[in-house]
Length: 526
Image (cartoon, rainbow, N blue to C red; front, side):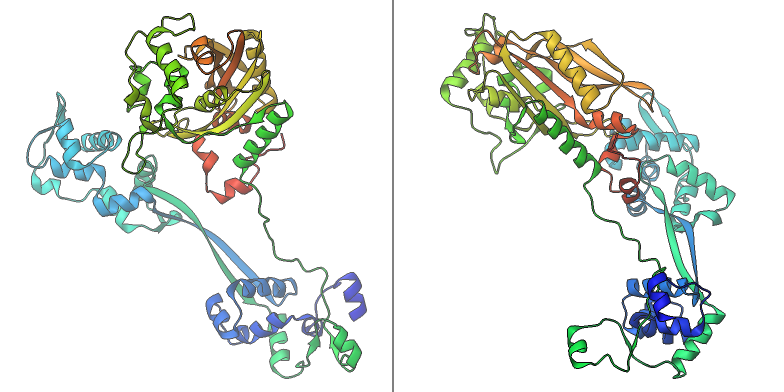
């Protein structure tokens, strides 16, 4: 029988002797605990000295032999999410607003400030209180219209949040209504799947435990034949443990690259194959490189706090400007056009403005730095740059994102070649089937174009990035000859990935949801 089982696997059904001969050391250690009636995995682990994961694995093997019958169940539990935990501590936005206006009528700004609410929270609170007929709103003021006694009573939402966690199936009709209302608000509640693991000892299992504990099968089985055992003949008179080759091993998940990281790596490979060289630049930039070198006027609205993140380096808010000759050429270009054939911006150039430190708002400063260092002509360069812009977080926007910045340097380049390159990127690199080109304006390119692509799931056209030919006011001061042209583009690589994968929410790109990362929702084999 041993030979048959070792070579072909157990034919079944199992007998008590069959099971006893195949028990592993771990299975033998936990069976007395099962015989003692222990059901909790932690108690079995403590009693047997075996870690819980090994106990679970042993129970799986015992299930394969018919010793136990496994019983797993999944229940969905509703619990507080991040904002829900904060609101439980500080109060819902509508509660905080009501507490502020309980004494007197206030303007919107006063009420929002005193309640410590963001713009979005304030609007949600207004809507919630108006729907409950607790306040009235007139000419940008908010006033309570109920008594103080009524105002201090808890909302049904507050009572509901205090009762969590609750099983989803156990919710009453009223609680379901509250859940549906709260889940439309960001990160207040969430549903978690909780798995419970249990088992029952079968009739065969009871006999196996009796056989093991009754002393009928206490013989030590050889698990592994070693050179020492062969040399000293210690194997003689012993029995070898029989292995069940039909038993399923534990399910393991191997590690792999994060899908978006893999996508970026593939993009880099494609660009290198097209003859591009990869470049890098600092995340914290001087305004000189982010704006001035790109012929962006110093009074341009895009240089304000609503479009840039200003930072400090230690105690200083200023960085270093480049060597004097380059700085002088850029300064002259802004003030009067220098030798570029332009009139410039006709405003006095402010060196202090140039020194300001910012988180780069685009990948183009990397290109400016390349052009200032005597690049190869012809030459092709690219970077995948992390950039930062103040923005509202939603399904299509993040305050920090990636741009694929690229330039091609050569003589006699034209706009048609730029459009062809953009089309190649969209189709070959990102797999986008429908694209359009729209006229655009950027201070540093002329002509300029905007690339948009069709989202197959949302059924909308999405902005993917901008491109153009660098103006002489950019290339000549940085050291290029007058007849040398530079094709340039900056594409939102995050959105390219969204289109390629048919994703509806840009936040899923950086998701920590292990199920999303493991499943085929993100597939790089297309």
